[in-house]
Image 1 (spheres, rainbow, N blue to C red):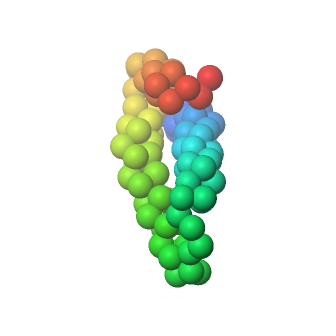
Image 2: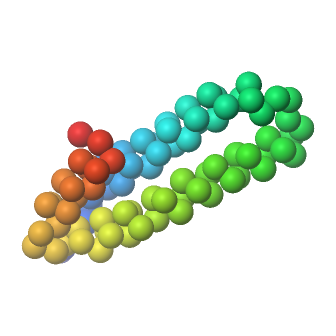
Amino acid sequence: MLARLKTRDVVPTIVGLQEHLETLRTAELARMRGKLGTLTQEQEEAVEALTRGIINKIAHGPISELRRNASAPEGSHFINVIRKVFRLQ
């Protein structure tokens, strides 16, 4: 039960990481829109899928490690490190 509670403590960090990466993704897409020119609906969907895929691959490792380490004795330290690395604080 205690391990389960500790795992729940990591959820805000995971959500914060996902939101932070999505914000970066959308900001970069907005910045590049002018250089991309007019895109077809299919091209627009491909760019969206490509950038989301990249973000998901970047986030997968840290999120998996957060979940794995959440209930470990040093779990809170690990959570703080991830928060600092991704500037979530």
